[in-house]
Length: 232
Image (cartoon, rainbow, N blue to C red; front, side, top):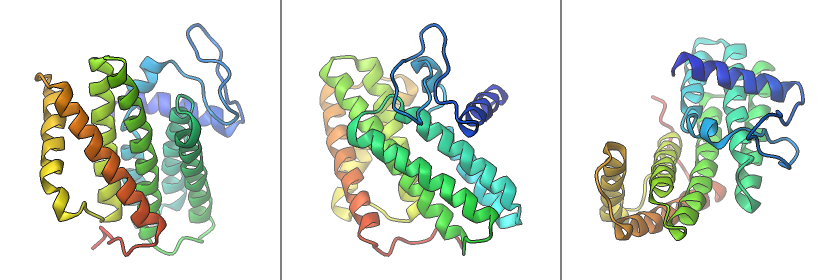
């Protein structure tokens, strides 16, 4: 993680911790729901995916027995989710807020010694990434409808990356029947990442695949499926 991003994340987390939900200034969004943080979209875009650095660091610190350090990293991840909730709407915003609250609760439980294993962390991180995937998927759909291919590419990649992260944390994998669609989605991710040309048809197929897998993983987690631990 680049140093300036750490500073931004920690600063925002500090604002949240002190109960300040909006930061005024030119170009900042207004009328966000309570508990959300108003930030410029361009600044927020630069932090897409940064929660994973905090989640991975939290796991490392937890394993080492540094529970206060792990809790701090988790709270920073929760702050990023609340920032994203500020530009989400409806169910997506609610899920991001709920996931952020779950992370805060997890951090508190870690410090108080009420977390039994790293599996509790993995599932919380998987749930947070799944909420982000659904949010980015919705933004990608809006961008495609508006014929804004630059934004659609950004959101498609963010949704796919978040879904990949969620499946990694939970240990759950897409059904074998979706293998071909998964390969197509990863090929689309590669094109977006490298700046290669991609078609609207590819994007629509990617959207369908992501929507299906987001729903599938959500059902698996909600239904208490035997998601596998990634721990040794």
